[in-house]
Image 1 (cartoon, rainbow, N blue to C red):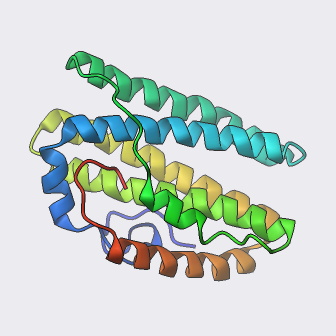
Image 2: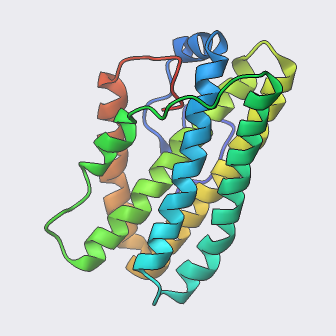
Length: 203
């Protein structure tokens, strides 16, 4: 399984890097990026809570995700604090076309085990793309403060990606995960190729 690398062509196994124009657009839309980022962190915490509730019999998953809930909510508060420092409102939550597209690829008619695996891999892929995007911001923004700000988030997302892959391998086996992950990466590439480049969204 791929591990975190500074090589942007191979980062986390993603098959298509973010278009450089996205960073330029994000740099002039930081208020919108911060709002969307805040909601991304909030939704990540909620998703982990949902997994814990649904799969409460999987002890390792519960133990590993419980602190992630706290961490993701802490990230939400950090981003919210950045908005408050600039006297900016949180703003409205936007429809996340990227995540909704990923959800459409989850197996709906498969076995419970297959659906569980897809849930973990969906989370892993969201964390991987978030990590890659935060890396782009940490390298491409003009403001040194925000470069450092997003560097820290990048490192955190890389750890979350690794955790979801590790949990998937524990409960489904490495070979099954490897094969399905390859399919997910190919599907995600297609999403990235067809989505509009917008600087007001993390994804």
